[in-house]
Amino acid sequence: MKPPPFRYHDPRTVADAVALLARLDNVKLLAGGQSLMPMLNMRFVQPDHVIDLNRVEGLSFIHEANGTLEIGGMTRQRDLEFSNLVAARCPLMGEAIQLVGHRQTRNRGTLGGSLCHLDPSAELVSVAATLDATVTVHGPNGQREIAFAEFPVAFMTPAIEPNELLTAVRFPLWPKDHGFAFVEFARRHGDFAIVSAAVLITEDGGGRISRAAITIGGLGMVPIRAVEVEQALVGHVPDDNLLREACEACRKLEAIDDIHAPASYRQHLAAVLSRRALERARGRLPSRKAA
Amino acid sequence: MGETRKITLTVNGSAYEQEVEVRLTLADFLRHQLGLTGTHLGCEHGVCGACTILLDGQSARSCLMLAVQAHEHAITTVEGLAPNEHELSPLQEAFRDNHGLQCGFCTPGMLTTLVEFLRDNPNPTEREVRVAISGNLCRCTGYQNIVAAALDAAKRLQSGSTPRS
Image 1 (cartoon, one colour):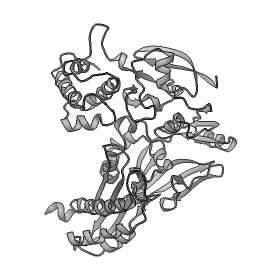
Image 2: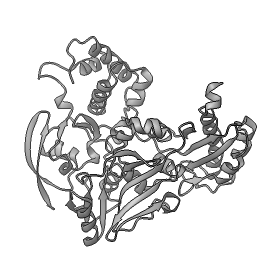
Image 3: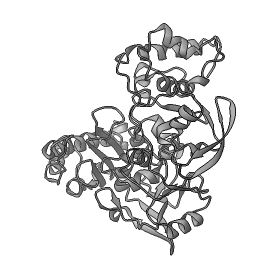
Image 4: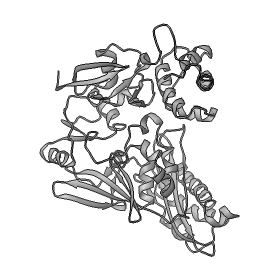
């Protein structure tokens, strides 16, 4: 197999990459290549130009500032996996990254590539949705920011213009004593999840849930925040009955139906996996850890 | 022939300067242009793991990289694992002794994947080995002897006879 012919560009700066994007038509941006390269090999895409971002400087970094974790678009998934900062301050991402593909793909795959590819089952997409991330893109008119709630506009389609480039993502950090969990069901380790659940919770002094964020991946065309479940939890002590009953709301979420699983099965998984994720996250709250 | 570029890179310790078509995958470059056919191509879309090579010491699927992207990088293929023509690396010896291969198609990807894994995890559990090779498909062995070979290799490398690759 061989990709179709294209012109290859390997700019060294964001400004050069943006200038190329402005000048050229039918362009594909090549980040880690773990999704674009298969599509090129199978000729699902036939770009006239490929702009390789791997030699652009300044797009790979992880740092904490003003209560957020800011991560460069070309930061490798491997670097997220082995980052002490991610493990300590954003453990949801640390747990999720273990489930992203395999070592060989995480060594190349990038945060920005995963978010822009926007597979509804992708773990990093669910993490960004759960943390209410903000995406920074650069285009001909400078930079702009996109709240992650507005980032997916349709199936595998991000709210990025053809002349724009994702450069960084900011993840607002939760308090140090929050509970977190990422669970998924996949046929084999490293496969795309059929359904996944990402959970963040905090508790107040009385052991009641004070804040909750829950995302179901793989269920719909885009990752879905289970707002009804979040609302059912806040203000209550998370006992087994509450978690089970609250998660039943996932059965009413709109689900896709394909060769991998019927919609009803996905909805069932959403209810079960969100409950399991909540149980695991609950076990990580300070009141439970002490017990 | 479409657009080409001149690249310089190191493969198994040897320096190369080559003219490549920009759309050429690294896997096809290694096999067809350098004649290093030890790197196998199964699916060519990043699922089977047979084409795994080491890029600056880290495993990567050579079907999911362009040859031009290897410019100024160091590649190790299965041909670069043995210390010389007459000896095998401890990992390769362990594969031979444990019948860790049958048809041999997946073997180059298994070996390169495990070189990185055993370097980073010198004393792995069976479960960790199984997760490590979860991105490499084998249709012969049922994986059992590959796992046994990897665990045996870890022991051999630990005992430090000749810690290589």
